[in-house]
Length: 400
Image (cartoon, rainbow, N blue to C red; front, side, top):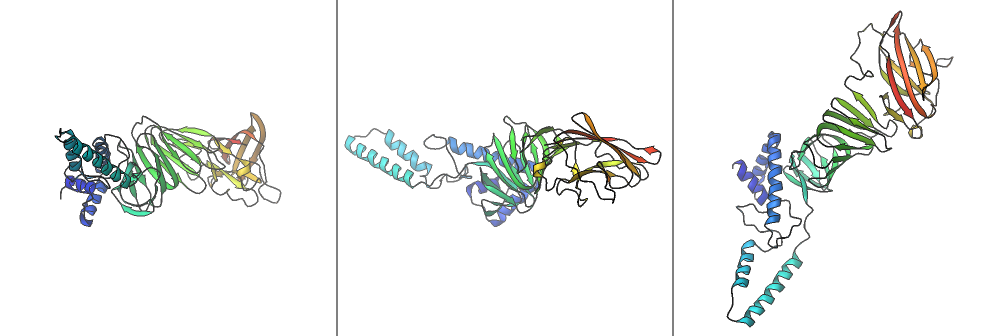
């Protein structure tokens, strides 16, 4: 059976298991196949609405009989029957009383049919076009129509497509729901990672995660939701990421951002000095900064690396006995720190022993505990190895 026949058979509900597997393999083979199917499905629904006997627009099933099928919908009379009824009503009768009785009987019959008609299914906003997933608590293999608000969990790698070319690539275990409609797209990502290719949109596409919301007008990006943070990576285009606390950042091509309960919004660029290329083995260098628990010297869970622009919510931290460690190369023997708050220098020290912490150590070698006061901070750290001074890097963060 050729591809056109397979697609028509899917709309008709006539495919056997072998044919359904062949269609699924064709959809998975090429993204263009998936987009073609999604557009055909959208056109099929629009045609179904246009051909409704009563001419009224409304919700239609995910698939109906194709053009070469019988055109019988669930709970509705077939179109040939309706055509006959119209011809009879249009034909002038020689017996007015009989015609009137026939008209009353026809009205009652139509009323009974409408009364028996089941509630329409929710509208399909997109289609699972590759892979397997649990859709509305039922295992499904592509292709499957997806209605608004239905929960989806990917069993493995899977792809969802909208008719306008928007695609969502799901990692195994990802959980989401598609809200809104085919134009005003809304996605709720509860867990896992997705990659999206979004053509220019008439209305901003919005993705909600447990930690923040992303607003997209047209771009290629990935969004990864973990227990304590949501990470956004943008390949091209621009995406606004807004944390639940209200902080937001516009993330451009080659940039990534994180939103979480403590580090509300973090933005890094590919050339961000906080993540430079690995230095030579014998060169003093700092690769980044880490928020640590002063009592254990360990990184605060899920909030280790601090990026430029971080917002720290003290109320959400597991402890207020804090310090910030400069993560230095093995060749680094000292770090020179300058820390200012709201433009005023609050700490200047040179640390000569690892771990290199901005607030230093106690006399017995423990990391000194520090609870930062609310404000806007700038931390500048310069790595040193003997007479050599490496490149200084700066970190800007806000404490509230």
